[in-house]
Image (cartoon, rainbow, N blue to C red; front, side):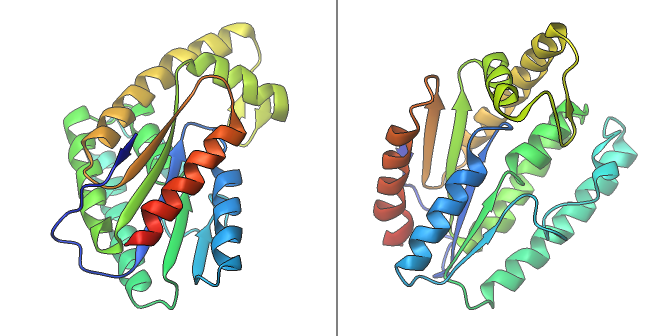
Length: 228
């Protein structure tokens, strides 16, 4: 699914490529591969991986908890809106033509806010605010959507183990519960993604056909991202 509607408010030659999806989707691998490809083509590209030290779009981990009260959610939103405003300003004056970010918008902010119980109306407004802030960078999106979220957790833990980062699975029931809560979160994110009128490619991952997915991504990069 490619969507190529552009907002009339966009007027910058800069481009932002957002790669997102639930944990273990292949976002970091895709971001690195695309960055290497663009750099080899002589395109000035910056790639901000999720684990980058002092990431400009992430807050300290402890601030992602207890978002179910209006006061804590408001403080969280204000800090992230400020970070996104500064990030956009910095990118508009940077030498790079393209910047790639992975995980930090939908997985680390919108999904986590949903999982931590932020008020839905407040979260919807927050998501739209971040989307509006990013418009001057001509955002493009590659989004990995998983048809079986529980199976995805089992798949990635089969590769990484049951404990990595903030993840810890101690029983089969943990996988079942993770599947349930992340399915609900992914549904919210997918609705947000579908409503955002920017060029996008949605990879519906149900068989881990990485070569086929990479071919679709390469086409999207060539036909959409590089055609701006």
